[in-house]
Image (cartoon, rainbow, N blue to C red; front, side):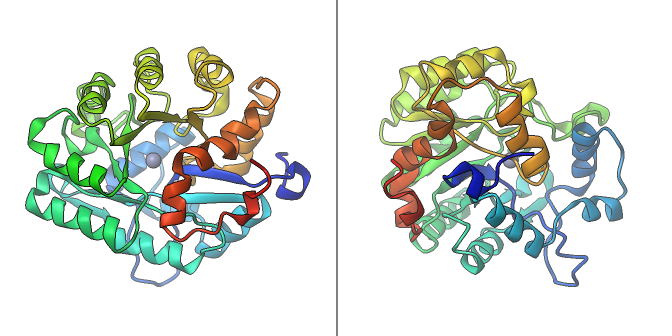
Length: 324
Ligand SMILES: [Zn+2]
């Protein structure tokens, strides 16, 4: 079993997960289901190799109390992401206000949150982006281009990138393969490769040198391109959510250990992956990290890269003071 906080000696920073995907409806609260129910069921089938009913799907999710006590026991501090794609999917997902309220209830485990906006909402997207960056001190905006059907390099959205950069916000950009729609007829209408090629990040990072972008996940099949963009652009970073550690491409493991050792951050994709059995255990058992690399991946890089955003969000970084 993975080390607890006590055994490990340092807390972890998880820069990407859906800690707001909770069994809220079962608890009788007027919460929101995880994004896009039908696709969620397909996603669960992809992750867990079995089809779930909506009821079973809810039962796979933790309650808020279970989530909080697990993250405390293992010393994992997190940054949950909101989710929305009203134009392409007709789905409002999990609102920024819902995730913001969640992190406010648990300032001892959350360091801030990723808001989500739909670029196709035009003026409303701009207003919402400004609101969450100004009022919620969101770390940045998370996008899921395959579900939202847009290219980061589409010039119609440049005012949005400009606005995010003006607040020193980050973009979390979905890289490569997505489990969303996997196995459904037509992949649930999701075009995987069209919107997830990091050439879009390369172009936008070049034109917006003050805009910081995290290329997420393994970025399969564009892994090598993602690492090269990250190496070339000082304002582009990487993170590790979205795959079991034993399936990490060799290129990712190699670059975490070597040339991108200061740029990769730990992400869990909780609760789609179980925090301990799937993710923390996997990092400890299935990957050979060189000396000192695990600490960089698990918290040091996140503090160096996102520290200003955590502090802007009001996070208490004292657990790490003296560990850097
Ligand atoms: Zn995610």
